[in-house]
Amino acid sequence: MQQVRPAAPQLEGVEPYDPKYIPAEVMISANENPRDVDLEIRREVEHAVRKVSLNRYPDPLANDLRDKIAEANGLDRDQVLLGNGGDELLFDFALAWGGPGRKFLNVPPTFSVYAYNALLTNTEVVEVPRRSDYSVDVDAVCERLAQGDIDFAIITSPNNPTGNLLTGGEVERILDASDALVMIDEAYFEFSRFTVRPSLEKHENLIILRTFSKAFSLAGVRIGYVLGSARVLDEFKKVRLPYSVDAVSQAIAGVIYEHRAQFEKGVDEIVAERERVIEALNAMDGVQAFPSSANYVLFRLDAARGIDGGDVWQRLLDAGVLVRDFSRTPRLENCLRVSIGSPEENTRFLEALNGILA
Image (cartoon, rainbow, N blue to C red; front, side, top):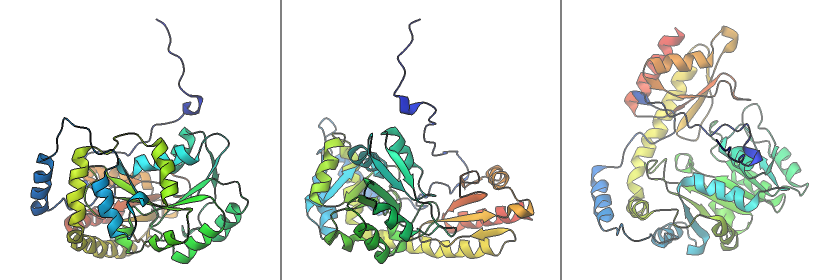
């Protein structure tokens, strides 16, 4: 049998990104919103979807939705670009600003897809690790950017999986340090009530990534967007796949965005539950929960007391509760991350963990 030519050399030894989707009774591992879209809004969604011509290609740039997002953010249409979830836009970022001979600045521990995309595009990764409390070492980041050879950087705020939030002053310092294009990933900003949107007025080297997947309960639909200067987004359009946001997703997201205020009650409930979970975790012997401004909590189990994070993760799964295992991840040793679910799901998780530790 004739052999096939090898794939691109940068793929050798690469493991495909694994979101670790494992069915369980309590799914609190993927930072999804525990509340589905309310029935009243779903009826409007169904009406909008019924009007979609399935035999026609969608608006390539989703201009109706772009206009809604632009107006809500005090921007022009050409300062907004939609994608098939934030994941597509992250890959487009690496395609447009990365490549052989170019450098990406990463601040681990953070979302692993950033470095993964750099690897796929033959981009060199330069790491400036976070401090022991997982805050960004802004002095070190600015010092490295000032060397002038970094092409792009991504900093999540709040950070995934640690929950840290960058201040506006810290972002301003980073943007002033060089001409590198800096993406602030605000996938979870609705839970922190803080955005760096005002900095767009002064900094062309800032781009903001957001998503419908978290606060707006649309993880299953795949809609993300970026805010930035028109000149920067024109570069994104050069690498963006045509028709990447399908007509059905555009129709659904348009209805959801018009009713975005109705999701605030659910966000408030998640924030209140987050604080309850943090308090309960810190009351357990051998557990350290880190502060969070997002819809998840990172916690570390005490290895000195013989508590193994991987073992605890498996025992939680055996009890029907799925959380995210970071216990073997560099700089996150013996840590697990729990997404904030419904009050009942959170209680079940806490009771299961307490039983395991006891």
